[in-house]
Length: 247
Ligand SMILES: NC(=O)c1ccc[n+]([C@@H]2O[C@H](COP(=O)([O-])OP(=O)(O)OC[C@H]3O[C@@H](n4cnc5c(N)ncnc54)[C@H](OP(=O)(O)O)[C@@H]3O)[C@@H](O)[C@H]2O)c1
Image (cartoon, rainbow, N blue to C red; front, side, top):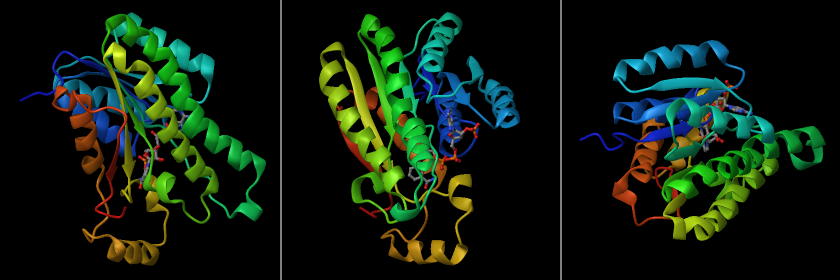
């Protein structure tokens, strides 16, 4: 069964990692997929042709989610190209880690702008279309770190906790228009973002996870598929952890 037949989805930050797998899963399930990337231009372009084999409409956009005007333009361009937007996955994110005493203002500002302000930018622009349609779905990518904190990631944790408060508020504001807003809090998922970590540290973490393994991108993409589809039509304002039991 194709769960997203006839729907149009936007996935931000889909040139690699979790976003890429979400875009792929949505296309496999019949969605028309618009996606964004920023610095990985070649990967973004390659993904566009790769996803077209699923037979739905696919287009990649180079767009910085942290810039308010770019997000507005992006949503306008997608509506012109695809006709509408039914699902938005606010996935784009970065880390710029450091202990508080060493963290620079730039590290703080960059992470807050790309991880949190981006969610405001894209959600605000897309919600206008969804309100007219009187339906829509937002899925916002937080992290277990946003719930429990992590030494060396005060900026990242703050941005991810901010996403939870933002999403719960939007769920309350837009619920009456049949617009659902939920949050995914991944634990430790194997991607380029985590490939830079010391393998010994990773092994230690895996031992502390009740399911005794790191998550894969498809673990997160499958949760997104559920939240994007009508299977979750009575679920809004929730945080779903995809963390192998870490939380
Ligand atoms: N991996 C984990 O263990 C884990 C755990 C919890 C939460 N998460 C969250 O899950 C999301 C995806 O993480 P990931 O591990 O897949 O990371 P990743 O492999 O580093 O991919 C990040 C994606 O975000 C895009 N991006 C970065 N800045 C952007 C901007 N300003 N505008 C638009 N796109 C931008 C990147 O595009 P370009 O490369 O083209 O710039 C890339 O496609 C993030 O929000 C992350 O915080 C990840």
